[in-house]
Image (cartoon, rainbow, N blue to C red; front, side):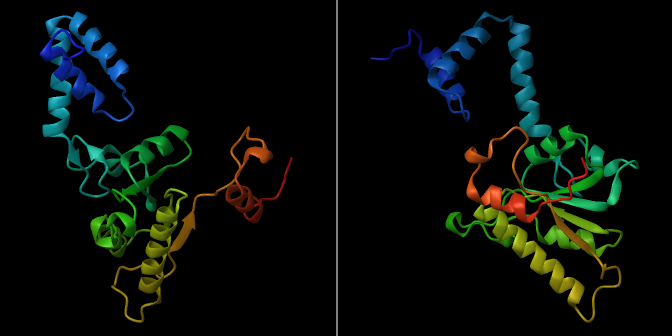
Length: 214
């Protein structure tokens, strides 16, 4: 026998609970909250997700989520289009944008190389990154992928592809032969105690140390 007084309520809870990080108690609370809202509010809520599914687009340049063919970042004349920051997903773009410290453009891979999950270089947007660079005008590629084995594997693969392109004796006419390849710094987060920092992070923070200028 169901714990819910209504089959419709149970189905709504099941759908809400299918979202990442949403347990059944939270799902029930959210569904009951929606039930108390006006028809207009619930319809607006549902329409937002319907539009998200059917009308959202991906930027033809960087593969970021967009309402138009070219996302606002790629379309902006105020951004530095000579610097491309390579990230795993859309959330990473949002995180970096929230820092207010970066003025270049992005390239969203849509994943990282993971042989265990059957994800290879052809399954993510690496070829389109190479095509983008071959058009010219790119001075630096920043690798901003996760600090995981899969992220490091993807970093190395992209690095080797770029190195091979630059070392090619007969590169494409617009290829940059002096392309700078960088990686975001890895170290101890602000406010962290060293004793609670994992060895890999702490080691990288020492290797990548910078001059102390007071």
